[in-house]
Length: 563
Ligand SMILES: [Fe+2]
Ligand SMILES: [Fe+2]
Image 1 (cartoon, rainbow, N blue to C red):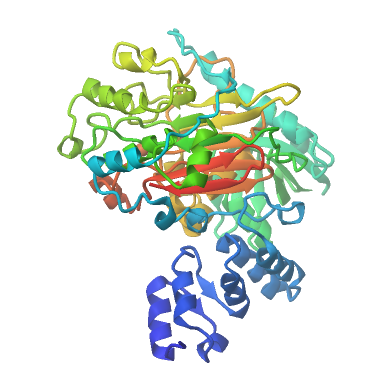
Image 2 (image 1 turned 30 degrees about the vertical axis):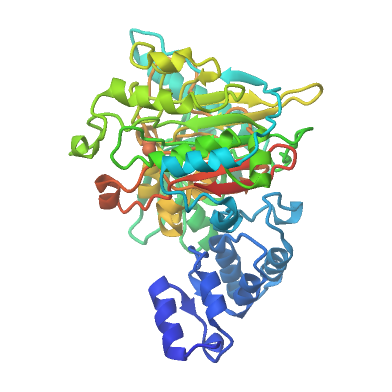
């Protein structure tokens, strides 16, 4: 049924969607409105978008499409825009994107979620009902394990008498590694050290690599940076008249290492291009030899009054093949790895008034409960766990593995592998196949980038973990700005560098699930198992609990199960 113009405007206004004039003349019906409900990041609606949405075959990052549309409208050359729309129309519900559409990322997972009517989980109210259901199902043949886990990087924080040199090492190692990547970039021609550029009297095309020391604005609203290398510091001007460059420039943050190409002036560079270390475009999606699955969880928050115990128990029942339809139980039988990216418990005194929101008020009690729950996960599945900011380890990163005296039970579970935050783990190695590298990071630095990077804030902030993760991968660093996370000094090298290009980048912390591809890397932000806290409400967070991203390692397809 077609709906009235007034109702349509009202409905769209409530959703924050701008609708174009042509569409108001008709052709929008209730079914389409219903479909629009799952497109949470849509801000403009036009004929072409309606066509794509009606196809119901794709997960769309509207932010990316809008960017291309705006470019198309601005330049009156809409080839790329049209081809993107076409790609969306032809795409299927997988995360394996064709080479051509590498630039598209996919977020907003709702379409992928197996709906509760066939999953049969949403209607279960209590543990009793779960038990009843369990008895009705035949026992499931659990595939016997061949899980291979190798911990590639997990840090040891040694007690150390810190000196200034430790601090210098931190930045020196960061600079040297990122400079090494940038030196090979073709966009950076005529590379010079900053001291050499400072000597130039004539206008000349040059490139430099530097660490961002200052970010300011001129009276006219241009960006003025100071970049530093081992030889000196120089000002770099990014003029607002070069719109794309200026937008790129606005994404710069303190302490990151970038390449700049431009024209020399008197002790200044007029920038023409900014180059980030980034992931090589040659990096491809790797696929494993066998159909097996990996699950990514985070932010369990046991001990909080808002911990969703029933949902978490349903998840555990599913890993045992005791609930779900046949397909889902079949997937459960092939789960070979589970990752938990921190915040196992809610902790004590994490934010003002925290104690009033706890159901378990001792830290030992919280971990005891956590162990009780996860020991019900089949013991043949390795569970790889790193801490988060709610856990009982220091906040400075790398955060160490848990302390045995506070979580004894966790150390007793033979299938649990404890690593630091961050850590790099290889899974699925077999025969000639060298497995998948999983970069694991809780994500404490994310708050800083949501608050300080305009493109992330305006792009959806906490709801767009994919933007944050892409931002970090481009910089090959999990916390490029020194103040974005507390750091533990004394490591020979900056431990938050992303030195090895991973196959998966796994995070948590923001309690909002997201899955996207970036240059062959599957980026997953875990959901959570906690309702909205008063603290999150104040910060404007809107958590999305109980989602479980499940990845088929043979196809690299991601499904999200909702519990
Ligand atoms: Fe959390
Ligand atoms: Fe957290």
